[in-house]
Length: 358
Ligand SMILES: Nc1ncnc2c1ncn2[C@@H]1O[C@H](COP(=O)(O)OP(=O)(O)O)[C@@H](O)[C@H]1O
Ligand SMILES: [Mg+2]
Image (cartoon, rainbow, N blue to C red):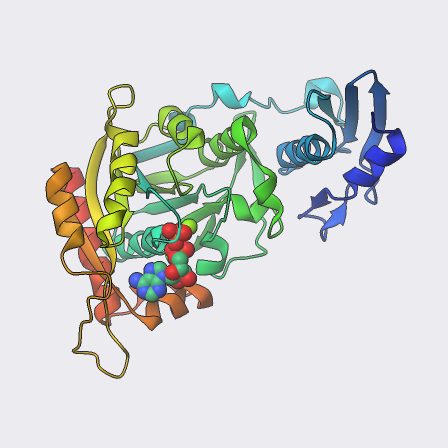
């Protein structure tokens, strides 16, 4: 079993993104470490104020010990605050959170894909901006624990969302830019750090990130789901009152099986949600110097075939162009522009609204 010193040195890997990325040992937050048999107990002190990252730090502490100790080690991480009991704001258990308490959101839509790298986040971010351009009130929650990309795609990295007290409980304020309210697991972790979340811990962190946010009145809340179709997805779709989904795919025939998994995640009888549409990304390649040319490098019409196969409308076809990749890297979504690529996302947004309002 690890010694107290060894555990302290593990805890140096837990960094506080809100405090210049200093580690919790350096910040003097580790109040106690005990090792008894195969049980490790760590107590973290949070001083007087409320720390919006408290749950995140508790989760990271647990994860870092979990990774560095043998299977079967019992881990308890306690958070204590110096605030007198009666003053303490009621911190709701994450399982008691419901969206309607703090919010008024008309449509919650998951953006999903059977696998990563198909452009799910690119579509989610640009769709959010396009819906906002059409006059809707929009929020986007980036629930991709494995690779949150909203901060980079909107050039909001380094922003730390405020936490405020409302009616005796704590809520997190989204980041506003381009007319959209953004929230990302990436705002609470330095790059790479979010990767340590797995299983139930990831589910709780995600639930909190979506349900404890002060979204205000929204027409659309989009959820950029993690890639794939595993347990996190099932519990996310079950826990968040999602009305339905959009599935993003590339045109290749081999993507059919991935799309099927994505569709089943929402349509299976236990979940029973709608699938509003299929979006075919990278439909064709158009080089900047030959704007009238379309090269169907992944094959032509794959999205339409898949859509027909599953009985889902094909509501968008997005070209593979350098500008879309570049604007993602620059944090200025192409949907802000009125060029053909921007218009492709505006059309997608209009088609989605037609499906949802139908
Ligand atoms: N239509 C497109 N044209 C050019 N590049 C794209 C397009 N869609 C996505 N990309 C690029 O492909 C990479 C993966 O896209 P991303 O949206 O992060 O995928 P996912 O969220 O499915 O993993 C990113 O670098 C992105 O800029
Ligand atoms: Mg992504």
